[in-house]
Image (cartoon, rainbow, N blue to C red; front, side):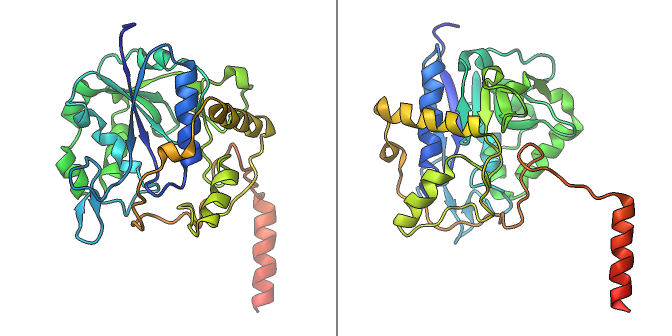
Length: 295
């Protein structure tokens, strides 16, 4: 398998909001990889010839209105894009690769499993995953059906929830969400998942503001709790620039407005944000006081 080329599919924003993420992910993946990488940037497009064609005005192409991101549902189309042959790696854009992708590329996908991914309490996390495109065919709707159904993403997640045997669990550190308490040397792929604390915002938000644009994330912006990971992203950002990578190389003609879910009430995850749970007694006392005030 030393002559393999890794097929890497990356879900990303269509309005150049996250160029910093794309550059850092591209650089970090290639820095550590022992195999060549062929990258497909999955971005909604006005081009009718594009696999990712979307026209919100006419209802043609992909329907994104129920997606949390501009690319949430694209991962299910990857096997058909590959003509149901070979393997493919999927990643969200907010990743920092710290290991050789060849390791994940060669991960076993055994038995009934169609995809290798991080397991979860209720459902697998497909934010980084390896598809067996041929085996996936029998479980996936056609791309034509996927495009027409705005609920495909949710429906397919439900399929995996009901049939966990379709997911081959891999090392959690291939999708290490915001550090998860691990030292940097134990992390294979860092997923800075909390959309409100993403390291790239400090570069992208000012860049977009200077151009009179807004970022697609409309929730509250917070500081990431781990300074070492913040510094690590900055290190790779500077390394990429020093190696000749440039933001403009990842820019496209902006798509413009598109329908999606709002993150105005986004609350992040348990790694980046401490959940303060009040005791039953304190909640009861608060209810009593509010009841008295209301009388």
